[in-house]
View 1 (spheres, rainbow, N blue to C red):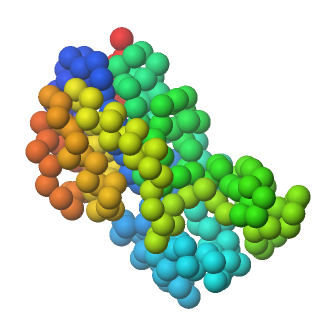
View 2 (view 1 turned 45 degrees about the vertical axis):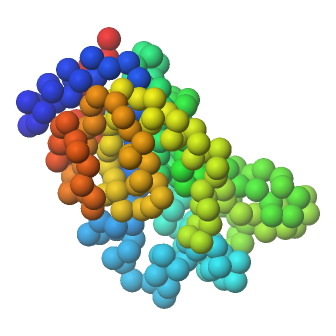
Length: 243
């Protein structure tokens, strides 16, 4: 399946030398990490609080234990492995073709696959810091702590380095992502419904030749794509050959 589209994509990649990948939750669902907005995503499951409430700054501050119960159970999937999409993007970077990955995901799978220049717009579950003394803690410590994750040094509450609702994106990450997209000659958008702003607006900075959209379902906003492939991104990118 998708043979003709994959051949077109291969030709575009072969002709490009400054490729940027912009990805969302659909990149990680093939690694068995649930997303928020699909038909069986977290928004469609029933909890005492909605997932949107739970992953907000105010909820974290006022209902920390309930936040951690949900966060550890539903958002910290530490046994997930990179899928063919992650691996191919890392291979493209190592070959010098791909200059950056811009991701809305927080799972660290791009780095696990070998990607080095990754702009994590919404942070990462792999980084956690004590709110009082700033001590760093890895994902395993937080995941397997009892109840609220607390600092071993000072007893302060540990906060995941993820961007919660009501919080702003990191300025340095924004600037790096926007610059990479603006300098790209090819932008591949994959596994995202382009519904979350301001991240979805980053594609407007692209001025290059080829814009490719790979997503199982239609996106929420129109982009003038050179090529659109309605398919799982891992199955598509897995077929690409890297010289």
